Length: 527
Image 1 (cartoon, rainbow, N blue to C red):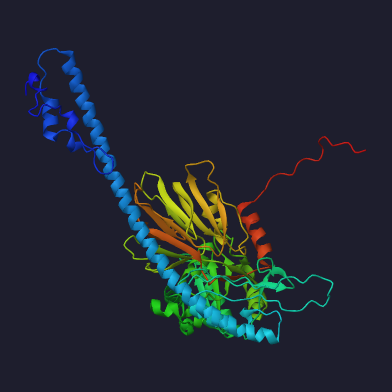
Image 2 (cartoon, rainbow, N blue to C red):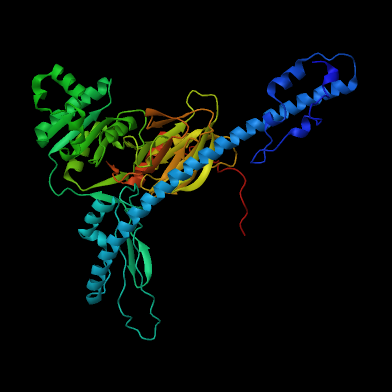
């Protein structure tokens, strides 16, 4: 193409004037120049040294770059709009399902309220629905402990006093498949609301009948633990006449040592493990905190009381010493004993291909924490976090830790989280090396449901690990949903939960250990 032909046009109009806008306001790159014509124009040699032609060629090159950016921006905007539309459709479908279930729940509650109002008209007294069998019926139908607890209909004896308005409180029910479980009891008396002091009172366990079966779990590959296990089994069998379960590998080791241990029971498959809680009255762990985590992971539902003996490197959950195991077990089997209810998190992985949030993989229970990190990727994690469908924040950093209060002295503490008493009902929200100095850890109430989602524009997938194992990959669009599990892990206390907790952080962490300030320094003068 010769330079003198650049200005020629059969229609008599310039090529630039023939551009048109697309429907959405963006200028289409193909409406200005054909791509081949632009390439030929940019690659054709310029004859002569006319400065105007050089400027014109540079201008065309700039226009081509601008048009390319506009086209890329338009494609990105269309992809983002399609993604938002898909999210909107999923959210609308989920809301419609919850609305239908909520209507049925409200109709059932209205029928119960009518019956209760008739009974209260005759006896206007304070009552707690959790104390009768209706609580169990509600739990079985709604999936949570939904119980009406408050009502006051007593007439005021003093006519000179203004009578307070009567009202009632009830737990909010989110539907049959809700993961929220509320355990606190709220009391009401003459217009004043109080809560049962579940968190501030020590919990005591008293046997109604003597324990008959004990499960002993041990730390593997430890000779001292194997010797103690064999000695403890002999003592429990000969002096307490208890039936004893052990792991299959432990039974093999014991039988190889002596045929005396033929009376020991064990299991052969996972189906029998699921039924262990119906056979075992007490669990004894010989090891460290990792052995307690292993014991808790074996029970997917209710957990028998655990007596943890300290035979490991960490002892935040193992207050009993093996040297005087006979005295400890005598006290535990006799009862009553103080216990700590250690809450667990119930975790579900929701894949992007799922039709709704109820279509999940097999749930996983964790006693310490669930961690979402970047794995081997060199990119920062990009996580969208929601609390009961309310947006919390977008995590950009190495990852995020969702921890129980029992796990507050584990990974969460190393990442900058606070130490929390294990009986405080809550969920710790701790970022790992966040890319923001103002991103500080949170402590959320136990009844919330947390959802952590990997956005579609994330540069890399994320990885979730549950108590340091069962690692799962979370691709863009996948989500992790966590809530408080209804089955806590009861662990026996040496003294009580507070004393054991403070002793563990003093001995295990050397918390606030320093030399005492010298007393021979300067002193304030007193009048």
